[in-house]
Image (cartoon, rainbow, N blue to C red; front, top):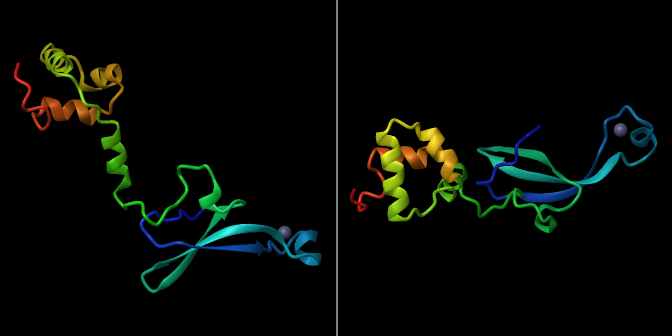
Length: 130
Ligand SMILES: [Zn+2]
C-alpha cells in the first residue's frame, strides 16, 4: 500500500475504483466511493488510498496533514523526552554509574533509550550537577 507523505500538499478526491473482476464493477460504479490522496513527487502525480472518511473529518491523529513536518519521527521521539527533575537526573546518572543499562532506565522512566543516552553523554541536563 502506498504511504501518503506527510510533508506534501495533499489533494483529496472522492472516487470509485474498479477491480474489474466482480459484479459491482461490471454492472455498477465499482467500489467506493473512497477518498484518494493525490500529491506530487517531483514531476509525477502520485495517489494513495485515504479511507472512506475524508482525513480531515476523522478523529485520527495519524491523518495526513500538509502542515506536518517531514522529520516527524524525530519530533515524536522528542515528545517522549520528559523534563526530569534534578533528583531524577541524578538518579539516572547514579544508575548509569552502577552499570545499569540505558534501556532498563529508559523503561523505568517511560522514555526512549536516546533520552537516557543523551544524559549519559552529557548532551542534555548538563546544568544538573552531581
Ligand atoms: Zn470489483
